[in-house]
Image (tube, rainbow, N blue to C red; front, side, top):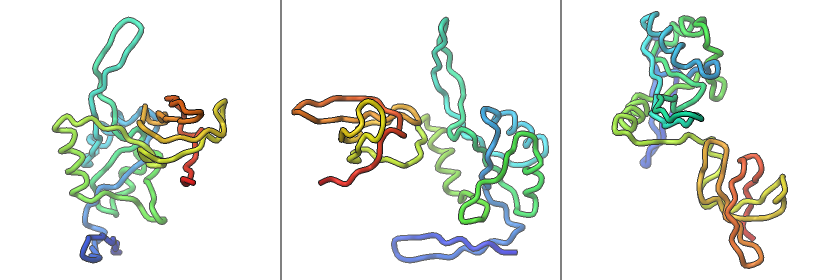
Length: 187
C-alpha cells in the first residue's frame, strides 16, 4: 500500500509517495487531560511520541505555579509505520486517529521540527481554531450585543476574542466567546 501526499510549493506541485513501512507522524485524539499519561504508555511500548508541552503560569486561590500544558490539548503525535497503527489504537486513553479526507492525518518531519524548535526557544503560542483572523470584520450574532459590528483585535484564550466595536462615534472593547460572532463582509 502506498500513500500519495501532494505538497504545494511556489513553483509547482510535488508528489511524495510513501510506502506503508515508512514511519509518519500520525495525529491522535486523546481523552481530555490524559495526554501525559498516554505519552508514558506509548513510550513503554517503544513507540516514538511527540507531545509538545509549554510552561504556563497558573493561578490558584492560594498560590501561583508554573505547569507544563499540552500545546495541542487533546492531541498526541506518534511516529510509526502505517502497519503498526494498532499498537497506538489499542492504547488506553487513545480515542482514534485524526482523519483528513478520509485518511489518517500526519505531519511532515519539518513541521514537527518547527514545533520542537519553537518550544525549545521558549516561544509561547496559543492554538486557535483558525475560524477568525485579527482584523476580520465581524457581526455579533447572539447575546446582549447582537447586531453590532466590529473588528477582531486580539485573541484572549482559545475561545475568546477581543472585539473593537465602533458605533455612535465611540469605541467599545469587549471580550466575547468565538461562538457569538460571525464573519461579515465590509459594506
